[in-house]
Length: 70
Image (cartoon, rainbow, N blue to C red; front, side, top):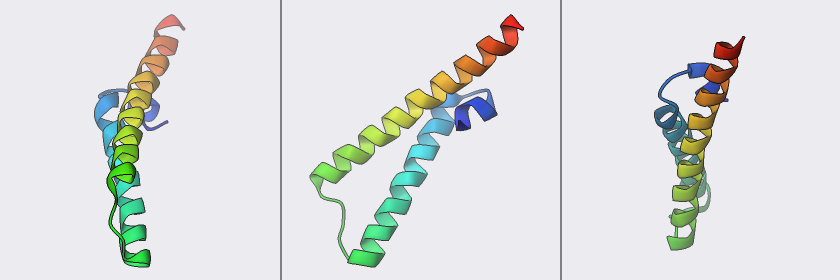
């Protein structure tokens, strides 16, 4: 959704969205449970960020393709 609303640089806005999500989860876990990410969680959050980047790219391309065809 963030990539579709921005309409440009979807990889960047998607990456920022994924990083903000991971930061919120990290702060919740660190401040609430006094635990850092372990290796498995780190891999998951890297994948979340990459998937958010791909979603941003798709969002930009889908919205620009629809506006071009109309």
